[in-house]
Length: 132
Image (tube, rainbow, N blue to C red; front, side, top):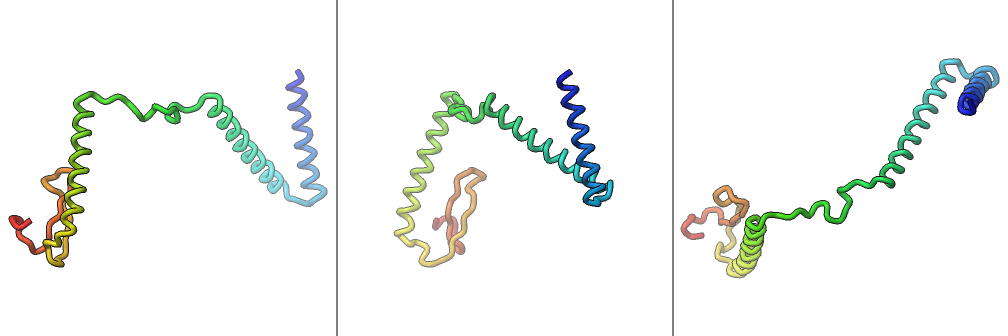
């Protein structure tokens, strides 16, 4: 009964505000309804946002757990990933050495994929394949 009494008091307060807006301030009836509609939307959005914050605080998402993205890989995949990393490091060291040689003598270079693999290779434009 206390909740019903509070709702009745709220409705009387809203009616009083509507009468004040229309009679004292001269706001049209549709304007008063628009004001109450905006107030209802804004209060609903704010209350929803507060509930989301409370729920997220009480029940945090698993993806923010420290080991969420780290899953165990099979031994074969770990070995292949390690080999790929070693090859990429070795390729990076060779490229640094090639830059000092300047074997292309100022010709422009373009990058292309080598046989559809994820590894890129460098070849000079206008230089035959057997020269590279």
